[in-house]
Amino acid sequence: MSTIQTVKVGIAEMEVVAAPAVIRTCGLGSCVGVVIYDSGKAVAGMAHVMLPHSSMARGGVVNAAKYADTAVEALCKLVIAAGGRKGMLKAKLAGGAQMFSFSSAGGDMMRIGARNVEEVKRQLERLHVPVVAEDVGGHSGRTIEFNPQTGMLSIRKASQEIKEI
Image (cartoon, rainbow, N blue to C red):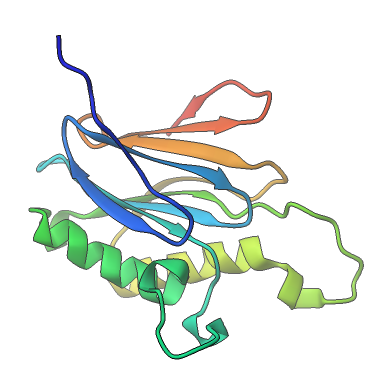
């Protein structure tokens, strides 16, 4: 009997796996879970993106996995280094919720979830990686798990059934 390895991705981290391993991240609120994969090679990478732009970084060294504008390209490079083919990459997204209500004060600054999704999509389009499925927005946190063998992204929200996209 074999057990399937589950690689966990923490907040502002990215990892790559090859089948039969699966990859998971928990606690996606306004953060976005980005999965980039090559189904023919059964390799996948996942990033847990916290913020839209690296210009928001405080300090000198930027954690590429933390920001949408740097994470998507870095994740593509990791997937390709693991055997993925540039023209065969696809993406799935989940997260980007608006976890709290705000009055009009704060405006766009408080739309972190939506801004994260917008920037991830902008970067994927720039790199010619199509988004084939997504479950974004709303007001619920998510836990996601991707299986590079099947290409399925399982999404679990509080008190809801597991959804697969």
